[in-house]
Length: 198
Image (tube, rainbow, N blue to C red; front, side):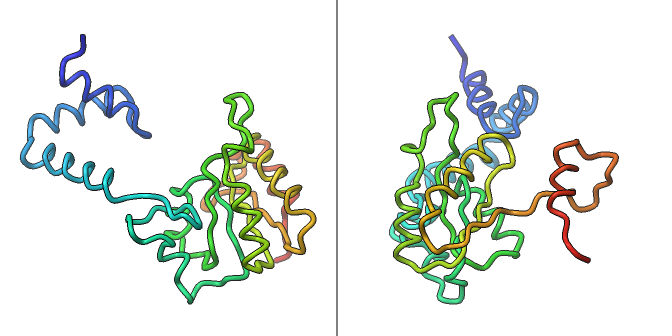
């Protein structure tokens, strides 16, 4: 049977970015300073569990009672382009970049037949309805560049092929501040195929 610290380590170890050692260090720090670290964390987790939900329209994180969210109701955003992402956390990353000012649609994952995650598990029906109802002229697919992301992008392109909307995908290529010597062959191939005029 696990003790309380072992259980805490195990729970922390399930978080992204936490390995066994970092989970152990975090658990020990939390129990060493309960007033400064543990109790505020418990309060923040409780609040998040009670108050955070996904927007019924776009799927972004929002506070309960604010759905549609601020991104959906902001009249200053470009309502002609819809950016499709896998998860709500992707919206957070894109917003932090400041490069996109359109609307969003989080699918809730990507196609992964090996994990029995098919089209019925994604918010694809809602996507098609939004494209029909909201008059978008472009759907930008901001999906992973792995095999599952590529399959999802192809599936969405097929779903929307009968509509007048233009379907695009994020450009592939070399990361900023990176050299050719440090890039893998697939990244280099995509950078060459997706080259543009200077």
